[in-house]
Each structure stands twice: as structure tokens, then as C-alpha cells.
Image (cartoon, rainbow, N blue to C red; front, side, top):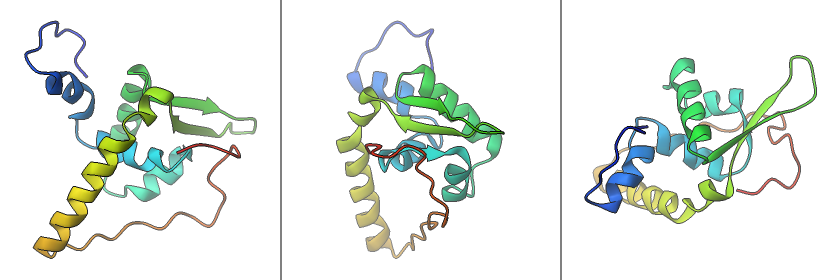
Length: 129
């Protein structure tokens, strides 16, 4: 995410500074479902490297879209969830999902989501998508 840029000519440029990096919208789409631990995010996105996922989560945290919570335990489990600012992207993410679904159907592209693990992955009850 660029912080050095001070001049924009279109509001979409501002949004794309945050959302335009590889894997960023996918991370946000998974967190839209609710809080997830790092390992569950990795399982849901098998093609993203650990380094890339960590980098994107840190960038989204700095941008104020994602909140990182460390829970009690050894080793201390960490979960990620959208902040209020991140949840405001819900309609945008839903629009991308709907458009992607329609396009995949039209082009005959299979979408094979990774099923969540059998373990409880939402460390806090009542987490909001």
C-alpha cells in the first residue's frame, strides 16, 4: 500500500491503493465471513504463500481494515477479523463475489472452495462478519 502518494485524480485510485494488491480482496472476502485464525486462512487460500499472507494481513491491519487479536494459550493463538472500516467493504466484496460467480459460470470455470476445518475456527463467540 502506498503512503507516499499525495495526489489522486479519481477516488477509485484511493481505494485501489488499499485493495489493488494481489490476494488482498480474497483475504478480505474470507474475513467478511467472520474472525479466522491464520491457519484457517492458509487452508482456505492454498495458493498463497505464508510470507504473502502475513504481508497482506499486516498491510490490512496498518490500513485499519483488519484487527489482529492474540488469545490466551501456548502458543498464543491469533485471530483476524474485519474492523468497522473493513466491514464497510461488505457490499463491494459481495459485488466482486457475484460478478466473479457470474463470469465463472459463463466461461465454465469451476470454483472449488476449500471447506473450513472441522475444528472450531472462530475463537470468539458472536464474531460479526
